[in-house]
Amino acid sequence: MEPEVRVLRLAGGFGRARCLLAAASWLPCVALGLALGSELLLTALPAHHCGSDPARAPSACLPLSYPESVPRAGSYDSRPCSRGWYYAQPAADLLRSPVTQRNLVCEDDWKLPLEQVDHLLGWLLGCVLLGPGCDWFGRRAVFVGSLVLATGLGAGEALVASFPALLILRLLRGGALAGASLALYVARLELCDPPNRLAFSMGAGLFSVVGILLLPGLALLAQDWHLLQGLSALTTGLLLLFWGFPAVFPESPCWLLATGQPARVRRILWHFAKASSVDPEDSREEESSLAMELDVLCEGCPQPRHHSVLELRHTHVTWKNALILGFSSLISGGIRASFLHSLVPSDPSFYWPYFLVAGLEAAATIFLLLTVDLWGRRSVLLLSTLILGLASLLLLAGAQYLPSWTVLFLSVLGLLASQAVSALSSLFSAEVFPTVIREPRPRAAPITAGC
Image (cartoon, rainbow, N blue to C red):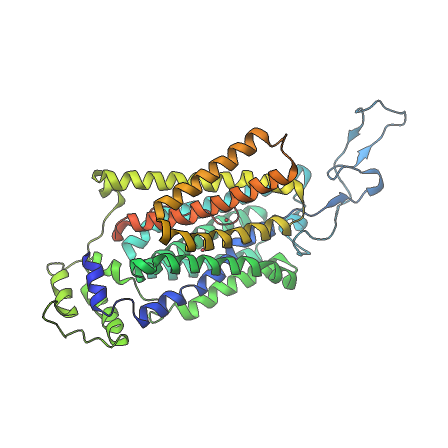
């Protein structure tokens, strides 16, 4: 038995206090889901036409300018829109969005994918930079600091006036949200004992889906993207009022034990023991007490010990598992855009792909809950990867020849498998890595690519 697991078992095991703290960590996932899902609403493109002469402008981008003589087919030219753009019913119930406010259409439509890539790049940088920060400064410190940054940057997005400033704020806020999500994920995982890690991790995923599903309703009430971003910043700020207190979100005792900080871990373990009606000083004949075990474990550790992920270069098994799981997560996240592209032509509305992806994420979570403990993590991961590969190959080879319902079925199946691979790869990699260097592996990208 690992020393950390033995000490936590002596502190009452997965008792009432640890169970309540793990369940309470689900609620921040709703706010994080709201913040991460807003990318799709902000970049949704509504139907539009130029205000100069809509009747003569069949193109959605440029009004046609016909010469006096009857031209040959394809000989007409076009000119830029000079009298403003008119937008139809908003694509996501936002009367004002960055698209409509700055007219990011036609010659400026390249700014939309730039903003999306900018947000995902911020998420990746947050994983790379704040992940090791969790191992050096603690899960709680990074979580609270990331929430403070996300709140301030979200308020800045609501007040920003220029597009370059918006790009910078979206980049930084994506990194802050990534840090908060990573710290919360690993802290929850270390708070649970091994048999309960899957259930509580998947429960957090369902709460994140709840936040994503609530976002369109919030957009309908706000109807302005500035107000929507302000409300998103308000939700992350409200998290600080509750989860900013150590009683609701304490530091991970596993991390404190692994880094040799007995004074800090003693207070937390004593609280767990008293909540489970366990005397920390009491020792039975077959095992020592919590106090004795903690003294032995932390003996000779006057200063905290911190480690780097580079120390794993001699552990070939851990490196191999990390590379395999990272590659699986990369493929599943990257190929998800291809499946979404196969879905969009069948129904160009905003809500169909949005709610479908959110529903498939919930379905993948339930699928993992029902199968992982029964068949094992490795078997389910291989099965999901196989389904993902087959669906991708069939769409790649026969999308032009297959019926529309078959393309729809394969796209839905591929999205379901990609969500399962991403979620299970994150859980598997967090369990494979040692406690002191769990954070450096990037988790799957959010729904925008996808808490």
